[in-house]
Image 1 (cartoon, rainbow, N blue to C red):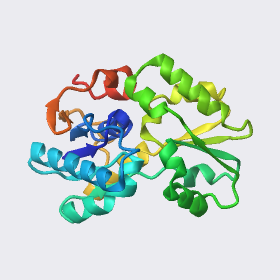
Image 2: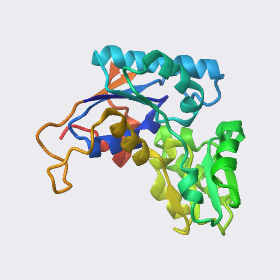
Image 3: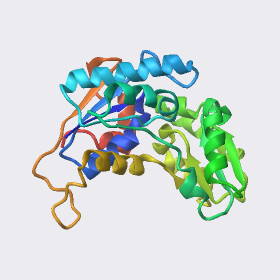
Image 4: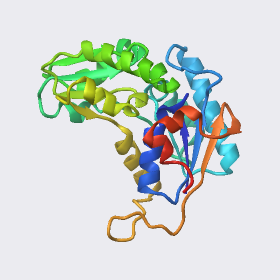
Length: 261
């Protein structure tokens, strides 16, 4: 099984780690784009071009792919249609949607932490309107948090997390992590909120949907433990070039989980 993940940077790690945990035998192609990141401030057409370039680079490196995953809200909003036009039905393309629906299910107040661009987007407003009707929703623009996570600088992360936490009302009991970068600092976020809010992420759901689309359930030994017969390779591409996992990726458990054992 060969699965590509396409994103601007290391925000893809939580989804890649979830896929690796579910199917450790799968070969993963991590197609990042450091030459053009971040994608958030770019025009929709530029985001589409970069997502397509990332998918094409992964396909060339792999020879063939069973799926392309887009673990990025910005790229999912702007690029999924074009990616699906180019790759499907031969190669399924799976996007990422913030976990607003499960977070709102309890009916208690929630917050949606996302980038400044995503917070302003009509896309997020539609998700809130569709899935959180009747629920008190605070949309928090997390200034600089994705960039801080990308840098793996603890002081920048702490400052950005504290800023977003200060904008989160005390009555909030669920926080949607609306940018996959934020998954990598979930412990810091939970701590800044004093543990009062459950965090909702999309990584495991996206991994599960990917395996459903390719017809590959979790690879286990029958007792729920991943079968050890084959360990898949992790190939990293940076703006189309073969590379190693970025040093910043190794600051996070999700990144370290992808190292050869």
